[in-house]
Length: 343
Image 1 (cartoon, helix red, strand yellow):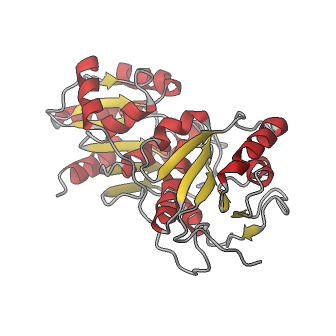
Image 2 (cartoon, rainbow, N blue to C red; image 1 turned 45 degrees about the horizontal axis):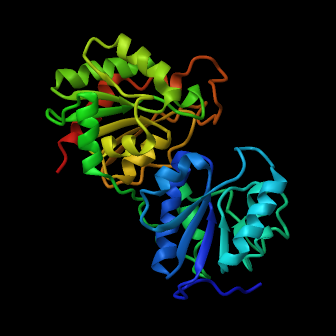
């Protein structure tokens, strides 16, 4: 079925955003592409992500999803869809593959409803795309491709977030931080599960190596990362600044933007650091880096590609966790030095 897109029409497009922070950052590639094509972009997204979307100038309005993650909430989605009809959206692009994520655009009667095949969404979507499962593109490219109108090749924009230097200065005053000597930021958590987290004792050893080189060490993350960050801080001999759970998501964006280098698990903060243009050392174990690599100009990806990797599990099914444990702190520190000293 042929559809007229919103190219150069000045009309609004609705994007149903993903549920994870890293995926939301990578969706910014699609937002940029739509803006370049003349669309005004609104994003229907989980409430937690609204401050993150506020750092994306391509997004005109972020609309909170009236349902928790995994909740059908059929009545609430129908009510939202009916409310959205007055906005006269030309197209909806649904990034999650779930049935329920396509309901609001359907109830809104948006004429073109685009998304990948998934969970029997025939009817809810009328512009269904198919992925090459044998050679899938990375996440940002997969999202950006949904904004293509008949193009076989689309150059994927690099995701970007705006940072606030003024807020970073205020955070420094409030938390007793200094920006000299430069800081290495360690993002020690990963929401998906323990199999994505480099061991706390390795992060602690890395903190000591960074301090020996004269760097400050910041531990950044959400309240859910506070326990593992406390474990890292306790095991390190060097002084660390543990900010996990003490800062908001926009605060973390602004602090990452002031770090000389960032070391991160495969997590949302990895992609946030990349989107503010910081040099990133990315640690992968249970997940393959090709699926969601750091899309910044200066980065180093460390992945051992063991025979048991990638398992994509939340916890190591074999119990040894060698995919991450055998990534040694001196190896990671060597990458930090190289990136921090890069022009």
